[in-house]
Image (cartoon, helix red, strand yellow):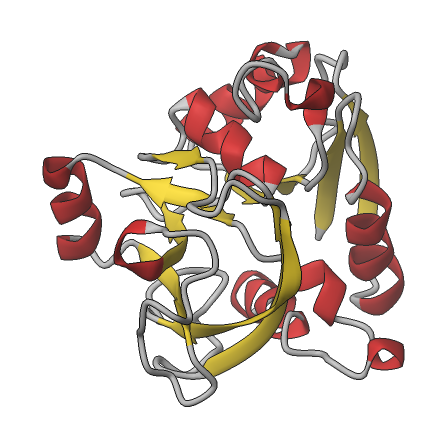
Length: 230
């Protein structure tokens, strides 16, 4: 399977993502530059974390207009798989590829720590091999990670089973204390209604190497490959 990883000015997790996909998961990688107009025949596009364009205006608001995003949006609208992590999730929201917005954390501070996530659905490419209700330990690193959507949009996301993960405690309980940024309904990640675009604030690529003593994030990449390469 060929993964394309996009680098924007200010991306700082692109090499982490490339390392996991190429060296840990043994997949073919295309390194995509933000000014490119060619996805190089990729089967799956990843928008990595970082601070694209310095997070000026809103995070992801400028990157949404990078030349490569014309191709990414067209690719997604034709059913192609796109995965946005952290800043990549913000770019997906700004591009309208997933619903909702990412706002400043409730505490107005940058938060960097491990969090627990409860898997909310098995009906997605990134979670199908993970038991519904399974709790994962995955790091976050963001200042604008508070997911918000108007009540009617939120109802549609919930009713359509589009929530991938929610912030929880180590026992899988959804509590305010386990919510690191004030996200509505503790939402940490969602997919679009067509289930081919996925966004999440936590960093699975930072929990996919045995040298880090945590491989919970690797389960998402295994799920993708288990479903696509059958």
